[in-house]
Structures are given as C-alpha cells and as structure tokens.
Amino acid sequence: MVKLTPYEQQMLDGKFGPFKQKALENIVAYAEVLGATELCEVTKATVYLGAHPYLEAVKSDDYNEIFSKMLLSTDETIPMGTMAKECFCQTCVTPCDHYVYEPLHLTKELFDKNHRFLEITKEAGVSIVNSCTPYLTGWLPLMGEHYVTTESSNVLMCNAVLGACGNSDGLEAAAWSAICGRTPLWGNHVWANRLGTHRFVLECPSETPLDWDVIGYTVGRKLPPHAVPILDGNFHRPDLIKLKQCFASMATTSGAEMCHIVGITPEARTLEMATGGKEVPTTVITRQDWEQSLKMLCDEGSGPVQFITLGCPHYTLEEIRDVALYIKGKKVHDGVLLMIWTDIPTKESANVNGYTKMIEEAGGYLLTSGCPLVIGPKCHQGITGMAMDGAKQAHYIRSESDAKVYYGSKYQCVDAAVSGRWEEA
Image (tube, rainbow, N blue to C red; front, side):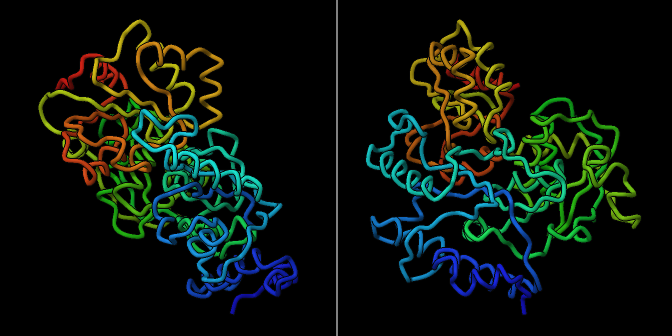
C-alpha cells in the first residue's frame, strides 16, 4: 500500500481534474509494482513529446486521444490539462529539426504535425527546448532534488555530477510525473541505493572528449547488470563536455543510472565515500580494452562518405565554436551532408556569435531538436559511407544502415566532410 499525503489523495480522488488524476493513478500503480511505499516530489522533468513515429499506432489525428492512449496508457480520451506547477518541464528530442525539414528528406506534413503537437503541449506548461542535454539550457536539478527524464545520458549526468536524484523510468512514467509532480520513492531517489558496487581503474587515454566517449563505452560493456560503476585511477580530470560523451556511451552499452567518479561526484570525494566503506570488485580498463572499443565503433580502412553527423549528445556552444572556426574558409565536398546537432537555445547563441553563418557558408547545417537516430533512416537513405563523433550514434546507427560507419573526433569528421573521404588514422 502506497501512503499518500492529503494533497496526493485529493489528486487521486479527482479534485484537480481527470488529467492529473489519471497520471497519479499510474504513478501509484507503478509504485506498487516497484514496492515503493511512498512518493516524492518531482521538481524537474524532461518529456519525449512531438510527432514521434510510435504515436502513429493510435491511427488518429486527435492529440488528446493520442496522448491519452500512448502516454497516459488509457483507452479513455482525457483532454489535455496542465503540468504540475511545482515541476519545470521541457521537451527532449523530437523527430525533426525545429526550423527546416528539406535537408533531412522529411515531409512538410511531419514538420507541421510536430509543431502542432509541441504547441499543444506548450499550452500545457512544457517549455520547448528539444534537447537531450537539458543541463546545458538551465534545466539543473541540484543535489538532493528529485527529477524525471527521458534521456538515459541525462540520468547519469544529473546523478553523478549534480547529485540530483532520478531513475531511468521511461517516457510514459516521465510524463505522468510531469503532470502530477510525483514519482515513486525508490531506486536512485533513496541515498542508500546510490553507493558504488564496481570499481574501474582507468589506465587508458583520458585527455580528449573522444577518449572519454570510448571510456564510457568500455566501462558500460564490462559492467554487470544493475551495477553502479566507480571510475578511479590517475586519469586526466574531465570537464562537462567529456563527461557528456562518457555518460551517453556508458548508457549505450549498459543500464547504468548512477556513476561515481572519484574526486568529482559529490558523493564520491573519496573511494571510501563512493563504496560506503565496503570492498568492491576492481577492473582495470587498459589501453587494449580502450582500443578494442574503438575498433567496435569505427569500421576499418578508408572510404568515401556522404553523411557526417556531429553532436550526439547535443553540442555545447563551445563545441559549435570549435567546429565553426575549424571549417571557416573551407567547403563541404559536393554530395556530402554535414549536420551539427544542438538544442534551440544554443543555436540562437550560435547565431548571435556568427558560428551558424560560418558553418552554413562552408556548406554545412547547424540543426536542432533531434539527431539521425531519433529521426530515423529516412534522413540517410542511399548512403554508403558515414562518419560521426558520438559513440552512441556510431553504435546504434548500424542497425539502421548498411553503410560503412566511421567514428572519430569532430576534427576528423570535418576533414572527411571537406574531402569526401574518411581516412584511417
């Protein structure tokens, strides 16, 4: 039995309308399945909204019906209400860029539908940001603050770096929590459950974002199910960009939701803090392990490329600046599509700083809101060679394409876009 506060009981009884009532009904049922005996207040949420292809299963153009069936998990059509007033909500990624659709080989119909769906949810109190890196746009849950999110790498970032509390609940549960402002008190919402269980000593390259991307991929593939990794050793101290890459790839090869980095994670200023003083198994990540992961991500040899995608997870303004200055005065090769992905607010900053113009003058695109994985194979049909700087993208896109997949630094990718060829390092 889940113990509810008087306010929660009123919501469950329908005092605040059927929209919130159904959301809380689902949260209570979810808590019962998990064995949670109470709920906690959620103050930050990202939600996976927009005209995503899975919503087409409803065979309806009525967004109330679509939202009810696919997100509220009910056959009853419940009119859209508003999100919880105490919870700041913003959108995760969507199935197309927010401003253009032609370069991605998408239809005007999808583009318009995506905007229509987002406008409806905006009226419900969701801010349109379209980001898989919400912490870059002011969505920052602090230590001890409870949040929900639909992005697996964001769970790791918020738990490991910010000390906030959240789980990988799934897109429906995130929507319920955004609506009612509650989630089951379980998993990483409970301090005792966040201790590290497996130590990884890094004896591999750790200087660049690519190094940390491969570190995350390697740790993830060696991590047992339901384990909490601890990164330790004499590594080069990472910054936010490097950890952004690390957590995206770690979430690709594992189900990790919490990660301790000794000396960086608030709960892991020391190894003893990370483990709670317990002995844990230790694995050394060697250069050989790191190089094996790199081989798994990048096809061998050199070859022509027609499709270059940067920004998985979404690029920071700093990364956009680096690419813009590097490509300034150069030209993307004929027949090559160069895409750099970020969120809406960061693109506006790139516009102000002239970075967007530099990229466009070179023949590239600074895009927002999604990535090839979210958009789907329509945007890269007929491609025989592609290159990217995100391990997550390189890992998953292989299931969508028969093309050669090359993986490397952003500078290697820009060089490939300009020459039309990937050159093996």
